[in-house]
Length: 167
Image 1: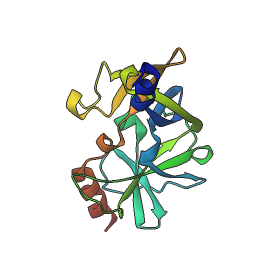
Image 2 (image 1 turned 180 degrees about the horizontal axis):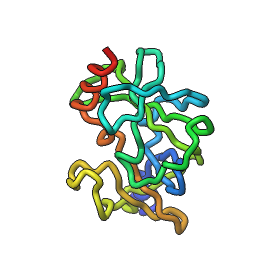
Image 3 (image 1 turned 60 degrees about the vertical axis):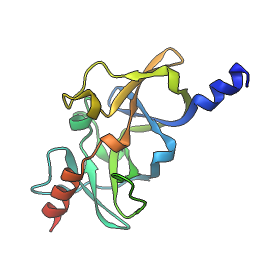
């Protein structure tokens, strides 16, 4: 195998997006759907990591607060102008596709191939644990992009507390 073939095998497709002034990317195969024009409703008693809920085909679906999970300043963002990236909630070996969660973003930029060798762990973790850090970084076309691991954005405990608050 030549080096060009090996490099192609190490690259993966990422959906690039923006929250505030921060550019991020998430593995495109992890995004189930992109919703536009959704109104996020607050949920009293939900974990602080959640901004609220939207109706989705499985019922009330949690929407994360990006400022709680990612290195972004979304305080000046207008939710009505953005969209929501819908992702599956899977923990462990579950093959069920009946739980989803959303991440509100300001703008979807496009798809880009990013090589695994270009991704490095972020320098600082919001959670205090590098193992649980949902973000890495990559240099793509002379731009630093935060790479998001959706499986580390939401915990089983937060999902359980969300469902309890929706009762």
